Length: 380
Image (cartoon, rainbow, N blue to C red):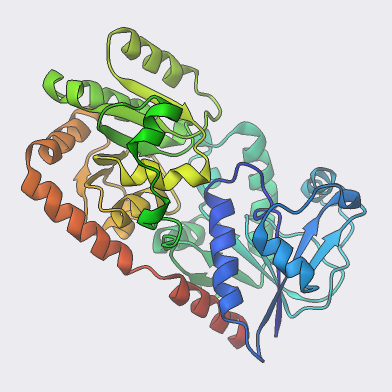
């Protein structure tokens, strides 16, 4: 059986969650290759103008397993897909084609099609989705869910959301989870506090939040919770909101600037290079995540993997990720501040959660995920 993976997420500049997930999944599936299962890739790269950036892509290209569609730019093709007038792509012969980011391209050959759905926030909470993405997802992702031969869901929570929001049969869905890329978080990749001080001006111990700064992340609650901590604790710890600035962030930016002008030590270093991500996690004292809605919650699992005592708002998908390994709070600033205060003032509790976090993370495995998907593709 041959599987083709749509590789644009792997080739994305300034990658974020879906991009890393696609690469880790592809690497896991590569390890599962044998006489019955082969993996290849395809990528819309107009006239071959864009050099391949990812080592996985380069290796596959050298092995004649990476097909580039050179006759149309992906942005134009995506518009044609949106209006349902895109010509089908002629790809190398395969049994399955896996689309890792919500949408399915039309195909000339009769391969079976699998699509990864990371969440259905665009249906459940459209106010937290950027307008241009909302229109695309409502039309293209909903259409892809109906057309797919197999839907890959990244959590039990997302599976239940897909079923309730679209009415699709549970038999059409395979549910996985998203393990940490343990090699990336090896302590050898920690560049230490000197790196944080020189490059990001982080000079004190800090409470970390990591992710794109956008409405869905509910970061106003994180900021207000930090500001509600006793002054002695705030003098000891900075709040670091790491991640690129997203859409509709005026309210958050104004709040941060106001609190900074009042003397609160809130740091927004912007997009974090992947090479520095481990350093941010490995040197954090505590982690907090207060999102309104997520499909999984990878930053929480990464924090637990690094043994960072964590506070998360009590939503179902975070429970699925964190289990008993972190403290839970209602989605309001005082509740989050109260749990953070418990961690800061109770070293025994923080140490217990640090151990529990590492244990929790070890229960997630890319080997299990890739084997689950491989077997489902073979069985179907």
